[in-house]
Length: 299
Image (tube, rainbow, N blue to C red; front, side):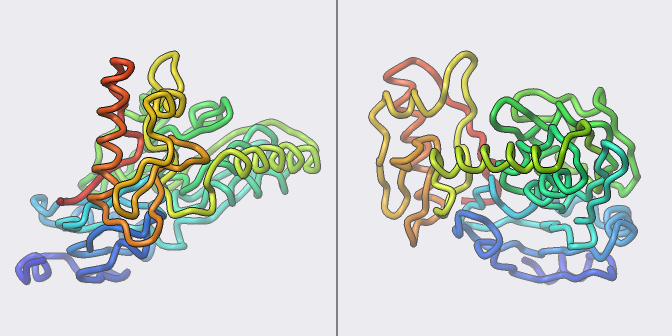
């Protein structure tokens, strides 16, 4: 991080942290620092920053880092991480108004408490609503697009935008919005259901996830997208990659579409292991796996 970059950043009411250790903020517990980590105090603070920032300073937005690999060289420019002020949840009928920093699991629990069904799948999705919107997150046959009503976001110049389903361009594990768009909040809708029934459904999903996935390991969630008509984990297993290791990076032997940091793995180890998996699947099946984990920063 250059002194000039620091001097050129606008005044804010939130906080700047220079050389922030991002490995403490991401689930893999690996990777380099951010030049500057910016935590806005509220929406107005974020909008003011975006409108006043030098446009040549790179921006990266992160949530809780559940599906993120930060390379060992760190991230140049400014990394934005929303504060708790962006994590509020409010129910209204069969709808939930949720902040972009709200944990998906917290939204699922709030829906159950409000007697709103249809959002139970979010209990099994790691991360925040902002990240879920960005990648149309989902599991067990449901995705954000199935419950999405609208979202509020700020563009790279700090201008507020209201987005509907057509604006989002949802596809499989993706949305069509520019990378510098920062989600602020969203409205999600389910259906009226008995709270105990919703909780029971949610517990069933949780038990299945606990049984099948290495949820207590240092991992980044599903590593690769499922190719059309295929299951990534079956291809990885069939290519002989279950339990494959590179240093402290390992392909989970519980669910082989998960990479695990056994302790001291570098981001480079994890990424190289993922690329080895891709190469083996390509040779064995002629299929090119596409990364689902977002890889950011400099090697």
